[in-house]
Image 1: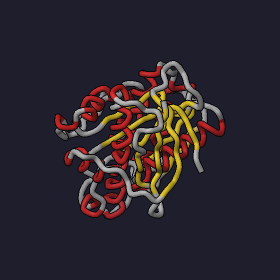
Image 2: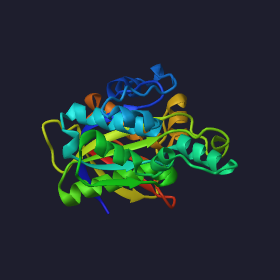
Image 3: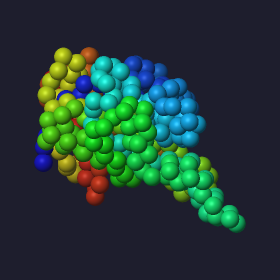
Image 4: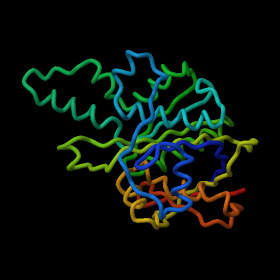
Length: 270
């Protein structure tokens, strides 16, 4: 299987920076990167009642998705979406587990409402009045590759723009001891089936058995290896260096961790 789509815009929020332009600077010169606790930008697109109810997973997913669309000047209500996460809202899961371990075992309706894996997709619809289809995925550590593959297939087969949003937030203890994630991270890619005046590059996707690409900077590699959504970093590094390199098919492919000992191979075209 092999397919090709175009990347029109990017959003990134993670340890050390909360926008794509800042991450570009780090990824072009990784010697200057220092991981600092992720800061989620203010999210004012939801009504006040919903803003009080949502956790960090919804906030970071929506803020990141809106970044890419703002860059591309695309109305959020006019784009199909794919959301992917390795575990959804870890804090909300912790709170529900605490309630179930208590004496009355009563769960807050708001907690239950936010426990579903497609909660960010639902809040996206509330925030943007979007009526177009939305897909929510989970593939453990392969969630970025699975999300990218799903979004690219929808974009290519249906001949429509698709916004991919991949996000992760840590669990509190004691769940963190079993499933540790070092911080919050989100990445968004606006994919189109054909080139536009804003296209950054075309990418080809196929599955193979090559080992996943790593980051040369130890701090960036720690982020990549400890947050599933940050498995995107080798691909983002290649995209950040595009103004300085010729992306014409000779650029080294990037391999992203997938399922069953496979990798998603990303080839870049200009």
